[in-house]
Amino acid sequence: MKWNESFFSKLGHSGPVTSLVKQKAEEVQAAAQASAPVDTGEYRDNITVRIKSSGNRNVALVVAEDPKSMIIESRTGNLVRALNSVKRG
Image 1: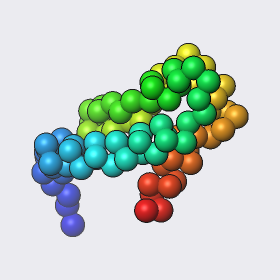
Image 2 (image 1 turned 90 degrees about the vertical axis):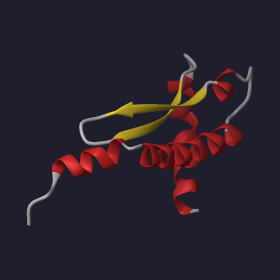
Image 3 (image 1 turned 90 degrees about the horizontal axis):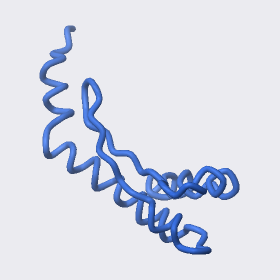
């Protein structure tokens, strides 16, 4: 069997697939913001979704952009917990 790479690349970059991926990422974003520790609110308010184009598809990234995000994530694992909660349904 031979894969039609062009077909899968077009499918992976298509609007409907990108929209579906973004929708799931926004669910993770909402869960992460809901469970985020709040001191000043900067960490929670700077959890965003980015769409990135790779070779065969578009991917959605949920990113914590606050300068203290690495410290907060290392202590709480908030983004991983949010991803797992959405994944489990």
